[in-house]
Amino acid sequence: MSLPPKAKVRNAGEQAGQAEEIRVAVVNLGCDKNRVDSEVMLGFLEQNGYQLTAEQEADVIIVNTCAFILEAKEESIETILELAEYKEHGRCRVLLAAGCLAQRHPGELLGEIPELDGVVGTGGVGNIADIVRRAIAGERVQEVGPPGFLGRQVQPRVLSGSPFTAYLKIAEGCDNRCAYCVIPDLRGSHRSREPDVLVREAQRLVAGGVRELILVAQDTTRYGTDLEGGESLARLAGCLARLEGLGWLRLLYCYPSGITFELAELLAREPRVCRYLDIPMQHASDRVLRRMGRKTLQDDLRKLVDFLRRNVPGLAIRSTFMVGFPGETEADFEELLRFLREVRLDRAGFFAYSREEGTPASRMSGQVPEEVKQERLERAATLQREISLSLNRARVGSEVTVLVEGRKGELFFGRTESDAPEIDGQVFLRAAVEPEPGSFVRARIIRAGPYDLWGETL
Image 1 (cartoon, rainbow, N blue to C red):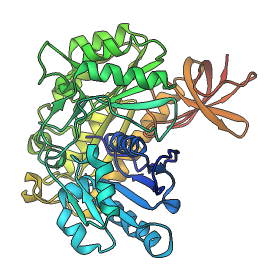
Image 2: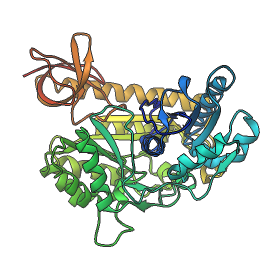
Image 3: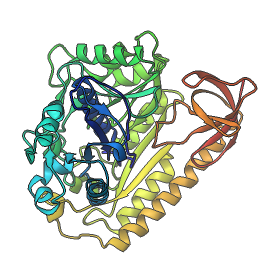
Image 4: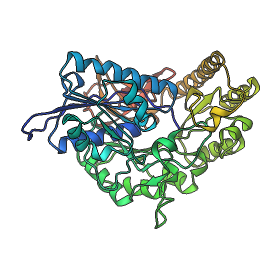
């Protein structure tokens, strides 16, 4: 599981049609799967006549929370308490907590935060308009049932980020059951969405101006294993890549053991599928990986990286690693550093193990002190920064395609196919002719940093 970005979604839209105009805001915390849920909630609310606005102007505020690690839970609670101020000093009449933290601790949230008017679990996305209606009527709602809203039909959505990029959630839940992870409890077991529904949803997004679709799930490589007809991630991606008007299709969260030759072949031959894979590896010490319950050991990871680089020229590989897992010794950590030096991944993120109640890892002996976790986190990040800087400098003089996203001062900015939004770097461009946001341009790289690149359009 990749570390969730700390992006908040604050959306605005307009819809009339109610006798009493009710303004609603959704504040999103956590990962891009949560972002999709927030956008779908906004879509259902708008469809039912609510006006979408920013939280300071809202009658109803919904906080879509995260509970992946302790830091995310703390941010969710802090955000709820901050927004509770609008009930005392602003327009807000109803404050709801939705998402993963609400799914995991509904009673505690309602009991300890009296300002909350209700909690909505991860399965309540499709009922959000009715839940808001009930809360406005005075009910203190506790809508927490089976986890994880799948979306068996094409859902209404209000995009919350760049108008040119959208996430397409292809499945819900997870069956991997890693020892440290609470996601199966929060999102349920793995369930794939039907391919025809995904194609129709993608068509609607592209027709609305989206140029880059990003496929997400807890484990995208498991897509289709629970469906009939031989469905797979490669088959779905190949179908979506043919959509007229689409520029890029990007794949995130590919579990190492699920990456197939079919998928690699698609990446190599299909120009619209970004030569980019996010592969959460989590560690490189076999002893730690076994304790984590991971299915791929270090030799498997090395062989996978070598296989992908041989078969997909120009592929950028991103991964995520955890430090401080129970029982991790200095020797284990040094093995991780050695792996990073030798494999030289294009991108890597790091986070410290968080002891989550109810997980097998929380009961393990050898819990690592917090100060040791932080020291290892800094060492790993520093090493990867040096590797990324070296790899980026090797790109100086090369030509790349850039999706232009906007302008900052005299420079335009965007991303290459090697850069996923919010988690990777950007390219800053000088251009003789002003490029349109949402367009693809060719550029030559003239300068590099550890994360960002600078170039000039051709």
